[in-house]
Length: 271
Image 1 (cartoon, rainbow, N blue to C red):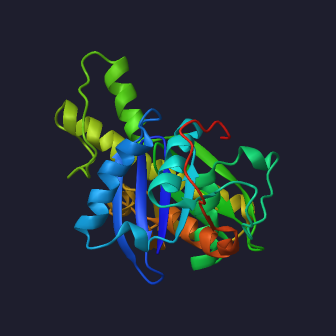
Image 2: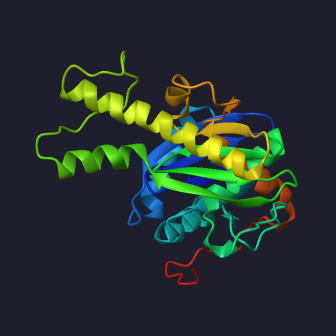
């Protein structure tokens, strides 16, 4: 079985795939100081509760946009699964050409979204990822990642409103019953929800016009199902698209997966 680890700015997601289906998926808040032992106590108990065994995992892959978290995640795979994890970086075979000014600047999550969307749906396409940032990742008709757009994420915008305006409370995200809010909270919820619907529709429309192409539009991220209720723009809702990208990347580079031999050193500064 394959263990995939997606370390984002907000959460670290662990998931196990048995070759046919996802067998378990678990999230924990991102903390670069969390040790491999802390991850292990939490993760191994969850794996067991799903009726799985850690020693059934024979492949691992890590994708992260938080470099400081990589050391402990890699050590987790080495020490508790006895595997040297694949790292979703430019050293692997992606099968996805990157046609941007500086390919090394493209985050692993955006490349993984592009890889999964191109493989599962085919281009030309745009992936809208409702994460810490709201990103738009574009793959052209030739199957190459050609750039995109990055906007502030929904929760960042909510927090900014709360921090910058003394009388505005911190609110949760939800679909409002009407556009016109009759109090502060409903007005804020309407502005966030319909504002982001308008943002997404406007940017995707401009991308399609710029590419002069009819695009397949995929929504991903935890809030994708919620925002799909407010628009007919999306052709596919794929909340776990990044995990699928990690799975596909691991399959493409399966020959590079190796077990750890000997003991895992307590001081490892190779990362």
